Amino acid sequence: MSQHQANISESITFYGAGAMAEAIVKGLISKSVVQAGNITMLNRSNSQRLEELQRLYGIKVSNNADLLPGILQNSPIIVLAIKPKDAAEVLRSLGPLLSADTLIVSVIAGLTIRTIQDLLGRKQPVARTMPNTSSSIGLGATGIAYSKEIDDRQRQTVTALFGAVGTVTVVEEEKLEILTGISGSGPAYIYYMMEAMMAAGIRGGLTPQQCRELTVQTVLGAARMVQLTGEEPSALRAKVTSPNGSTQAAIETLDKGEFFETVIAAVARCAERSKEMGAALKEGIS
Ligand SMILES: NC(=O)C1=CN([C@@H]2O[C@H](COP(=O)(O)OP(=O)(O)OC[C@H]3O[C@@H](n4cnc5c(N)ncnc54)[C@H](O)[C@@H]3O)[C@@H](O)[C@H]2O)C=CC1
Ligand SMILES: O=C(O)[C@@H]1CCC=N1
Image (cartoon, rainbow, N blue to C red; front, side, top):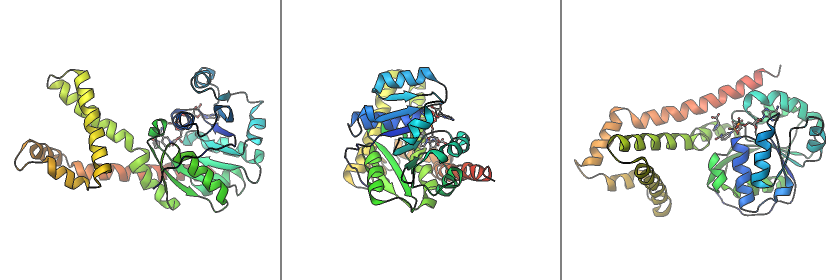
């Protein structure tokens, strides 16, 4: 795991201008890793969304189908940030526009390097990544697998790109699904837990503002405790849990709901669903 800070001078085109693309762009610009003028964001039709992104970040935008080929042909780095269902159409039209060394960076869940190259119709250098939305505040956790066509300079660029907005973990491609189950989708599980804690507090008579403040600080403090003390979460949990006390009673209630195994099952199902999405895209090729 590593955190890098470097400047990237090449221009980058984000194909897809949704939540994940914005999270990365926001992080890159706030850390001054890429100049706003070197970033172009594309979407299919939503001009209002593009205007908003341009206003917020000072980047270039386009949804003009006539200009698209020129933009893509001149972009040394293209980040694919569209939904899996739109990927096949986009990649088929993208293939003929690429140079041999255009770097393709995909954030699309489930879509394998092989399927990307098959859809492009060429053995392009590909970095398959799985970031998360916390990249927008520089606290992302990104998993990366590289195609064998990638050279060292391109690896460094991808590491710098995601290292600027959080940690980077390079894994074999087959591990990206389980990684998605932990860090790609993981923020949603934590938010869900926070929703439940806040709802409980409100039911118990605290104000929404108090619940929010207490819950945020508790989650932040717990994560920082694991990070800063280096202790195992189980050891830290033991320090909160007095014998026969209130925490023990709470944990026993969670265990009645099979909390631990349910989280493991959720992560496994997430990984499985990523594979299903990838398989559906692969089937669409023939
Ligand atoms: N949201 C998240 O937490 C994460 C998402 N991802 C991946 O990121 C990708 C994007 O997800 P979100 O940003 O959440 O989706 P989103 O729905 O917010 O954004 C998708 C974007 O793609 C654009 N688009 C769709 N078809 C297009 C086309 N033919 N030409 C140009 N633009 C097109 C849409 O206009 C939209 O701007 C997905 O593949 C997802 O698997 C990966 C990690 C985390
Ligand atoms: O839910 C999804 O499919 C994407 C992938 C990881 C986070 N969001």
